[in-house]
Image 1: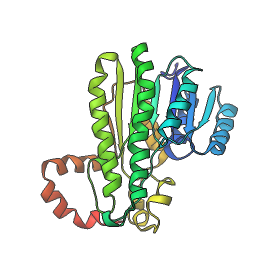
Image 2: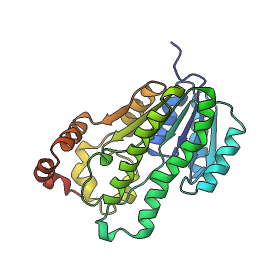
Image 3: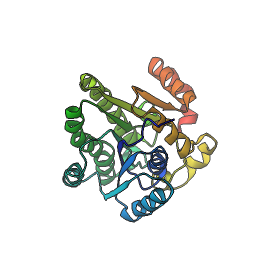
Image 4: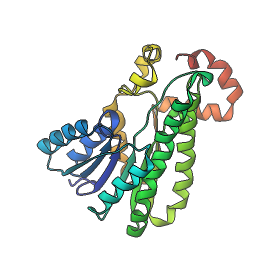
Length: 264
């Protein structure tokens, strides 16, 4: 059976590792043409060699720091000069630092917003005119359960993911008549190098290790939803149930969940 992604052009930011790389692997396996972006060109080149050696997909790699909006514009204009159609954009680039609000430096605060929010918006702004002209496309924004339930020591990170969800929900309505799908992905903790920066002490990872999602599992859920009208992907499901309860009974939820929230 022919894959829905066969021959489709898929753009992935933050593609050099973690779920970005796993998404790329699954898309290549399903016959898509890949356009991969990351700050680490060396890792992208290695991934390109792996994927083109194992699958018949074409893989194009570009060095990009999404926090630099001038660079986003420059790189995307270059790519858009090479390709006429963008079927899927996965805004995956992002990072977090777990600190108490007063301990987060201004540089860290600006950095997280520059990558997680402004960079995501900049990349989206570059592809939207093409998708609208084609009257088709799919934008997938990697948010977080932290965008639904804020917890101690993640005030800034949670704020960025709240922003991503707000932007995603508004965008979905804006482009509904242009046949463009918009999906928010809200995973809980994933076993990737994300925590090398976010959790320097290793305390959080140690406390939640048994609940951590495998990047391959998350990637498969995302790839399976490509070019469908999936509104949100929430993983794990039981954690999303908590976000629903939180929205209905925030005071009770915070009081009962106080011990669980303070695992960082």
